[in-house]
Image (cartoon, rainbow, N blue to C red):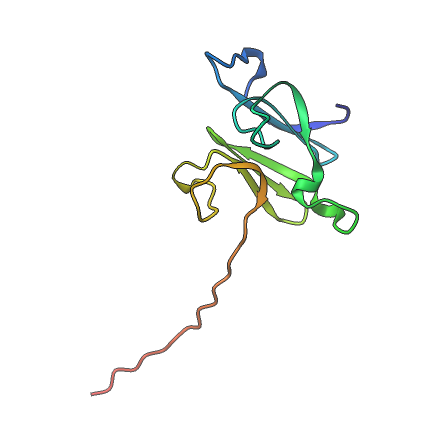
Length: 132
């Protein structure tokens, strides 16, 4: 890991799977997200712990040769959930989806970052007249 790092959540100095299931998250000025700790880290259902920071592939945030702005510009974390916003404004979430806390429309845990779909509803202003 080289470069400047930004927001950081968690504390890896107390990593202990049995006694302290913590997760940590940070991102670099290159738009990469690094995770470590124990639990749903965003690297699939098999990877549930990492003692060292490891990058989540940028392609999982929509970054590719056709969409270079898919790099992460901010990160956020809850007790068991993570969120990342890309440079083009897309919101990606992953983690424990208890009570639908990820806002995905279901209750399944999310093991990889997934783009949250946004729905825009246009409501036209109505004027009602009450005539007697």
